Image (cartoon, rainbow, N blue to C red; front, side, top):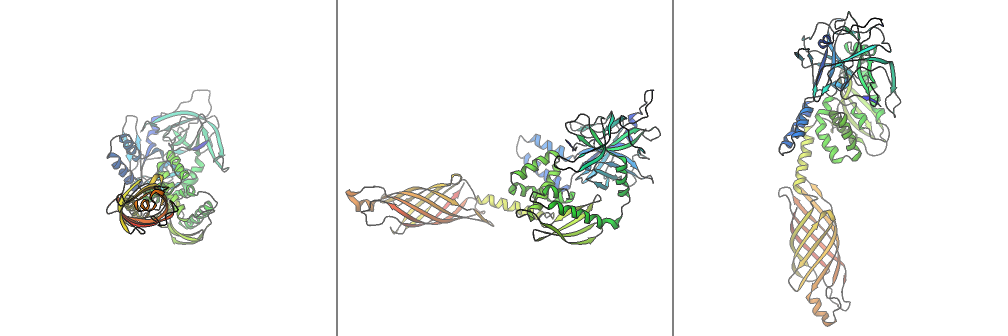
Length: 571
């Protein structure tokens, strides 16, 4: 199966006319001035989120490896790119969209053979196209690594031509320069996106040049003696075939050139038209009775993901089902930040999904330039969203109140969670004591009970000395309802008591057939707790004996009704 490489592939392909004499390959060291290592860092909110995780992990021993893994992640992904110059001599960097996806800041480093490195920070993204998997970046101010960029090949490549690859694949966690050689094995490869999606991708240049994780975004080169580097760009590497031997794919330069021309010569008058097209595809993707958050995730801006990811992941963890969590984990294997986008998209879907098929339409579009407000009608309810042009694509900046970057949502959620934790609702074990009034006996007795929540059963005791006591078992249902800093726990119970009643024994005398009458009863009541005193609660309840099993000669009714008040503690 063929898929986008999330380990960034770079392929530089060399072609030279067939000759009876050995080919003279230009020195690869010259490429080092043109092909660089691209590093990205993530949105500040994502960094803050993982720094909080590190701080929590640091409180306990044994988490050193996890903390180190987080540090490696926060360094940002890396890939490759190369220098391109337009007709006016302006220098840019070309690479893959997936190399710079979800980046907050970008840099490129050029490394010479003697180990000298030159780094350029704060690269500006001019345009990126997720469908083509292309991106063009600008150098900061007038800072330039060289005076010229790489030349583009002005003819199609031929099958069987020699090709070369170069770039910065990783050795462990360290990207290092690598130069390889292969041949073009298919000059115009086309294939389906997936088994379920018959849409054709391509054409791509398929080749066998050596590529490894970390090469994505670099040029596919052929030898051209009059070019500054000794090579001309034939394509940009973007795909790798999984399960195939040496089958790698590059975007031809003619496709890249069309993208570059559009990126460097934007037409603001077409912005609204492209927005309309983008919104139409977005709405079309919402249709159907299925989960649509993977579709929504494709339209999220990096700021939307960064600002809402922590709250979204908390919501997904609390409310998402097993399939949602599984999809999140699987996406994490591809891209951690991409999985965060899944979480944000999930809370957006959750804000308008009720059940069954989603019906969506566009009600109103207002705005100008590079920011618009779009109101959707989804399942007969209106949902407002903001769309911005990010890297030349229209993306969601905010959606309703759930994905609006409101940090109060998370703080309120965390505060609510902490309060509920202090309330100890749903705790495993309750024990309490108090007093009960036995209505038929007209006496106040000691009352005590214990509950085991996981198994939904408990035991209770009435004790008025040797003249009267009872003990029994019951099953129960309890609802735990948080109300601010208080917790309400209404309950119902069904059970039975063994009763020791001296009055009953004296009345029966020697004719006693059952020495311990058994009462089968129902109860209803409520417990009230507060987060201000975690674990402590007060309760009240009413018992009514449904029937008593005792000697039918006894004409004085044993205990039939009772009320009680108690205080207890939840563990």
